[in-house]
Image 1 (cartoon, helix red, strand yellow):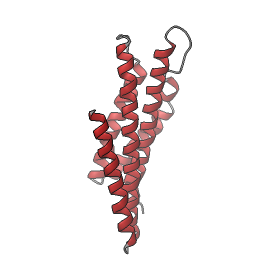
Image 2 (image 1 turned 45 degrees about the vertical axis):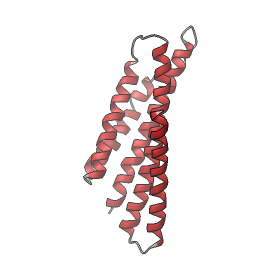
Image 3 (image 1 turned 180 degrees about the vertical axis):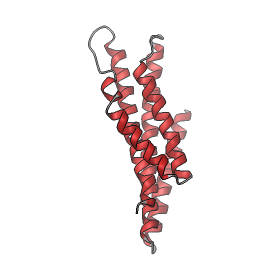
Image 4 (image 1 turned 90 degrees about the horizontal axis):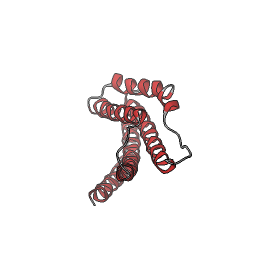
Length: 162
């Protein structure tokens, strides 16, 4: 399967980042270089976790679709769109070294935590219990992705701290 080869490649890249950062740490590094190495490790771990969550979401979505199309969960769609937008902003923040973008991601996540998290669908009982449990699992995976985005944003700021 394509996701299996993608997962293996991501694991390989994560191991390569850890090995390279360990090698760098053996040398003489100043504080900013050490911060960069730590950022790379943190971002790698967060991206790996995000990929695992995306695979979980895909699996649950396939099962939901096999059960027949029905209304979309507005909250899940909004959270998915927000996570997508923030991930792209995290990448731009890191690649272009834009501290203000990483800070914007952190503010957005804080805003989300005070609002939409309370509106996510929870597990319910009744005839659609399995479907609701799958939607809840998707919501939990999206919540973990948001937490990973927080880690990525903080790690993006680490090399630029005063």
